[in-house]
Image (cartoon, rainbow, N blue to C red; front, side):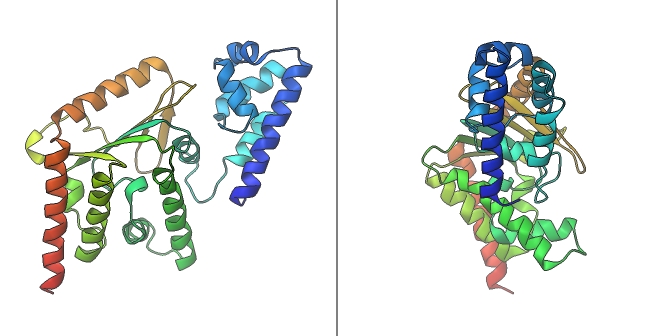
Length: 277
């Protein structure tokens, strides 16, 4: 489904939600209370500003007695084949977040990837796919990154493990360009990047990647991912634990200034490799 068609469908979702809520004699706040979100949150659904997670759509069906209508619509709309099923909802939330905090233990995060880096990662995971498949994945990743160019972009914090700088994804030329891109975003103050050095040893993020997202009028979420699945949660107690983990990771990281110097030094090392080959 094209982006324009998808947005139009979400707008239809919102219009139908408003109509059926009003038919049931419920205010936004009353419906929100029954499905465990704020009234403002319901208003954002109705305006297609924010997209509900599947479990919220299911609760809306139960409260409004709509026979699974909103669940079916939600399932169809989050079925974006450019992304793994477990990641599609994360993409929707990234575009609405006011603040994103991310820990990346092995790879440059998707929001910071260049096309060449994204292409190398995609091919490493999918060595037998067509060029069309690869380019679709790369285009989707670059599309996600557009939120960092928007005037209303989220505050974006990233902690990179030092591993990320020295795994030569795509080779020296690709890595030099990728790290130059990260450094440029840091200098432009579009993102605040810190490096967790090898010398930090054991750290709070050894369980893997972590993404935290905060919103204007919705509860914060935490997202973790393994090779074949991802978990997105907004349960307050779990998110609070994840935020504490991120605080510990960030506390063990180098300063932004020292991190920028290291990123630029690594990029220069890769450039020297290119010039001597």
